[in-house]
Image 1 (cartoon, rainbow, N blue to C red):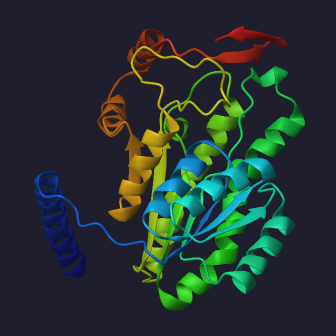
Image 2 (cartoon, one colour; image 1 turned 180 degrees about the vertical axis):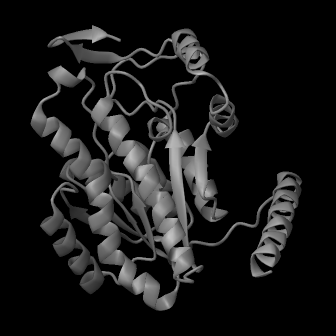
Length: 300
């Protein structure tokens, strides 16, 4: 009898959720304030991290900027201060667990408990698998996913204590579909998406609904890491437009932030397509970028 009742409740929740989603399409979501929040952004010395810092600075957040590149992160900090934000700079290697833990302790002593973290630092080595060095594979996973674990583990206790915070995972469309010649990157981004989903589920299971989570999944972004990217069906995005989409998603507590937004529909439709059709789509898409193939740099 209990299972029948559970299924009835489940059916009501599903119907209600669909109706709620339909209504939200036509009614703008309420945006929260991030003024005064202590926001830690990794990889803040360039690209998405830099422009995300600018967006938070405009909204008067207190910024903690991390990057391995001292010159780059100090440039970001200088601009954020011009925008009126209190800004603290730390030179941190996000592939080094002990350095992460030590830096978090330093942030707590000098600034306070972080309430929003944007795990943005990332790296990529475009090459076929056999041309990819072992240390490049290791570094990709250390930065793109293991760093998320160490940072989140270090910051989560204070969030759990207050049931308040926001954890942002910067992933990629490559965390949902694969692209040749960046196998370690795709694998690490699938792991990042899985990290976000599992963390979201665990926080719900713990009843910590005051801690929000978001995951950013853009297509190719013009950060300079991948040389000469192009695709027929996807745009090559600029970092400032991605940062604007990210901040909008954070302010509305959006779980999965696709850029452009139609990627969500595209990925849903692809789940119903046979393998041959997916291969045909990939040929039409004709994704290209510079990669090392057979130990030589080529456009692939």
